[in-house]
Amino acid sequence: MIKAPFDVATIRSQFPILQLPSERPVAFLDNASSSQKPEAVIAALENYYRTTNANVHRGVYQLSEQATFEFERARGRVALFINAAHHREVIFTRNTTEAINLVANAWGAGNLRAGDVILVSQMEHHSNLVPWQLIAQRTGAVLRAIPIDSQGRLVLDDIDTLLQGVKMLAITHQSNVLGTINPVTDLARKAHAVGALVLVDGAQSVPHMPVDVQALEIDFLAFSGHKMVGPTGVGVLWGRKALLDAMPPFLGGGSMIKTVTIESSTYADVPARFEAGTPMIGEAIALGAAVTYLMDIGMANIAAYEHQLSAYLIERLDEVDGVTWYGPPVGADRGAMAAFSMTGVHPHDIAQILDSEGVAVRAGHHCTQPLHAALDVPSSVRASCYLYTNTHDIDRLVHGLSKVKQLFG
Amino acid sequence: MSDMYRDLILEHHRYPHNFGTLDPHDVSQEEHNPLCGDRIRLDLRIVDNKISEVAFSGKGCAVSQAAASMLTDELIGMDLDQVRQYGKAELLELIGLPLDKNPVRLKCALLSLKALKVGVYRYLGQNIETDELD
Image (cartoon, rainbow over all chains, first blue to last red; front, side, top):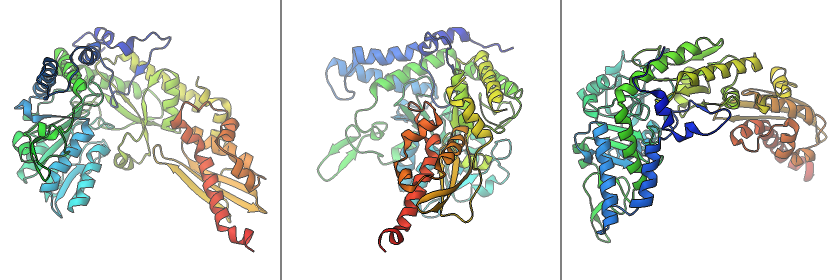
């Protein structure tokens, strides 16, 4: 029996969308794609527009000063959340994708040369692949990928060879399909030993487990607000201050400058240098509220609960004939999600029938075409949990799958 | 249960009509949807501007495969002008699925129609000299 270190029923009651009056409330199992939002986050967003709305870092009037204070306070909360050495190491971006593009461009353009290697893995989301391909095309650098084994883990036997010539290791902390949690610290030490930097895609890890950027010994971390009970439109790039200080701007415009003449400009210090234009003020403030919400519950508690959900999800999927799930067996290196196939039924058909049963899952390639090529399936169905998921949601998934079997069996 | 999976769709998915390939053929057109991996190949034999034989092959979701199966039944004996008139509305009526609010699945349903249109227009383009410029 699952015993959560917090009251899941109370947590659920804090999410308005889970309280909508309905004959059949939705079992929301697409959290790897985007999470639901608690009242505290919605209230913070609304409160900003109702009481504090003004541009930041500009006005000398009170409202602008208040907005600036709240915006910078959110930055501080995020810094605390990931144990950044300094709040100036936290840059607000639109999302994980933009954060990775920022590093690929601002760091890559000046540091990558023809023949340099960018090491990724077979399990990367397109957002940690395509930005590197684009900068590789411009600089002559090449991409190399760490392969995966049949259990969806990185094959690290030849890591020393794979690291030869590497200038950047760009790797996901947790796979958005396999659920695999990668040994980021071990990899970072090996990468640093050959003089490479390490960027971690934390889109799937930061919402679900304690992430301490200093303990991980990494150089850059990218993640999205909307997957961690925060709003859409805001994400974070964290980077070591010395590295950020040495990087030229990514986007040019207002806010990111010191002085401007017609011919040239000098640039602001970080983080402002990387936050051109009016930022997502309300969303960043609401992300601050999301971080506070998660910290109040405790990331270790969330991870412990989700670990039990992970075991329950796999146990129940194993009861369904014809289901093949991907990724490592239940253990410390597997998150609470499962991508799976069902013999003879296309993933879109499975997802559609589950939808008619009130179960929301994702079907497709989940932005990981190279991974699906390695799995040798064009697409899969993915069920992914979060702190408000309960065993009943998973039971409804399994019941829905029995309907699929009835129809297609 | 979902309207999407009424008996007719499942029946065509399980036992598709006109499944296979034609060799020789006058038209062979393959289309796929990279989003989900659905794939349809449509082969036609054309005599006097009319479809005399049809076959499809491919794999994918029930909607894409059943729609292709139903469409091929319609095509036998159809002349190419009728093919040009035959569109999305006709196909949706044929398969009887409520897809107007479901753009993702609409793509599944329309994959075989796309193969038909692309294939026939290409055939017409290639035969323009013999047909109209003699």
